[in-house]
Image (cartoon, rainbow, N blue to C red):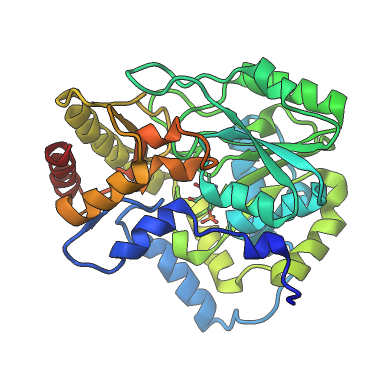
Length: 387
Ligand SMILES: Cc1ncc(COP(=O)(O)O)c(C=O)c1O
């Protein structure tokens, strides 16, 4: 007998972890499997957090986040979306994953389902499973041989039923770099308003775009729409280990957000919030620099793919991942393991980015190209040689 929920007993190690576990800490490997670059958080952000610690910022604080930070996030989000977003809609409960958990807690109960536009970073659908709801995947089409990733809106809407509580997507997407257009966003908003379904828009990569901006759902959602926008300091400000991000939520949920943030995390780490405040108010140049460095990484990967007739992709429009199709590959997990052993490069298997039954994903591997150019070039050469 056990008291542990079958859902929890059934949770599997995610497909990225399954491979990285085999090579973590090994010095002979070029690790490109995780969603972070090789850059330490910039000094001006680290210094602000150190100052906060020295000033004694070590106590509990308002569970929705310190007022200065929420105000600065509201300003940043208003600029980003071109529409006024007030601080009453902003909560800083921890990093993006905490925002995801809270958004799911607001809408899901066992028996419900969440439509997920895939391929999708596995932690998201595992969080849906953990909530007791069921993920329903709606796959983007295309993505190999230069074909664009495209969303079939009708298929998305047809996948909803009476138990659908939310539509979840990341734009720019991890792993594909696909960006949802404003036209698609408007169609989704109209559909979800009619059906009483929430939108969870994961925008952690919006500042990392190449040719066109990624529209924020905040630009079209009204303050009382059932829309949750997830964002984070992890990616655009190189702060993955800080565990700090934010959630923009319906205005009427301000009280509930203070409670949910308290029950989940008792609020976010206070000195990390002061670092985040410095990041969001003074970090625009760092983001520009980062995007430029990602562009160089993108060019290195593009060149390597162009020179190899078995690799193809749809060049990502945002984020810092290459989701590469490898002709003839049918088991991305076995391939990633072989790459680790023989080429000494760590990549994530495509199969991790959706249900195990989605064999389409098994044609892909994912790597993060926010890396030092020489190491990335070396990694791409090793991958090409292995193929
Ligand atoms: C789409 C997406 N959402 C959320 C996260 C998690 O961000 P955080 O580190 O802020 O929890 C990631 C991290 O890889 C991600 O790719």
